[in-house]
Amino acid sequence: MERRLQDRVQRYGWDRAAHAYEAGWSNQLRPGQALMMEMAAPRPGEHALEVAAGTGLVTVQLSDAVGPEGSVLATDISDFMIAQAADAIGDRGNVTFARVAAEDIEVGERRFDLAVCAFGLMYVADPAAALACMREALGEDGRIALAVWGARANCGWASVFPITEAKVRSDVCPLFFRLGTGDSLHLELEAAGFHRVEARRISTTLRYESGEAAVSAAFVGGPVAMAYARFSTEVKALVAQEYLASIEPYRSGGGYEIPGEFVVALGHNQP
Ligand SMILES: C[S@@+](CC[C@H](N)C(=O)[O-])C[C@H]1O[C@@H](n2cnc3c(N)ncnc32)[C@H](O)[C@@H]1O
Image (tube, rainbow, N blue to C red):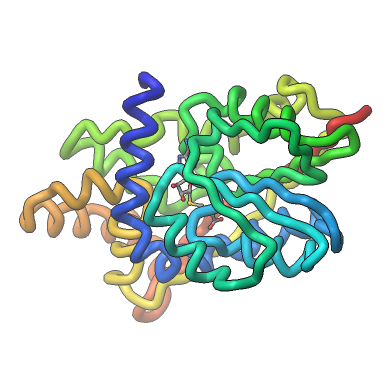
């Protein structure tokens, strides 16, 4: 898809999703974010660049880890996501924000110890260009840490994309699961010039207490929010029904336990 179009889909889609994002995804993404932070191991006094920071779930952790002597530049393509992240950060004093697409990040003379991106790279039209920007922003000893969703077959919620696409050509990241398949993320990091790359794949479970909560996460607070917002009431009911049918195998009591998979990777600027 043409980059300008994908950027618009992402920017305005996530603007719409922002208010429902944490309710639908913060618990679900936590194990992937935690492993990414463990591998990134930010230290007091370090300077971190965060890409696709969203509502600031990782930003807050980075801010705490680097402390008052360090800094975090948190970036995202969506104004609404950044506004929420800024609220979450409050007056900590060591975080600044910029609304910028991952492929357009320019930091001038500034150099960072660490660049991170949790669950953002799948949405970027040109991940190689985004990785190049992150590498450019790093100092000689800099490192990069990334988290993405795993393979489609291991993500029980993946039906949300074809269900939405069947109703409207939504153009939401046709290559969504590419980076999480096989060695893709590892290879992508090496192709971008990173060294000593280490990638780990972990299984996870997305728990929702009701069908309503699972539907809200998938359609209102997630990647297809823009397409869903434009559906009529009837079509919204239909896609919800289809999605619930697709996750029926994962029903547990009154809620759902949906399998998921994350791939988390670390790379270094120097051999
Ligand atoms: C699933 S959220 C992840 C947010 C956060 N990193 C987290 O772990 O909770 C995906 C984020 O990617 C952002 N995004 C999508 N396309 C982007 C792009 N091309 N450049 C920068 N951010 C982008 C969205 O605005 C959204 O905030």
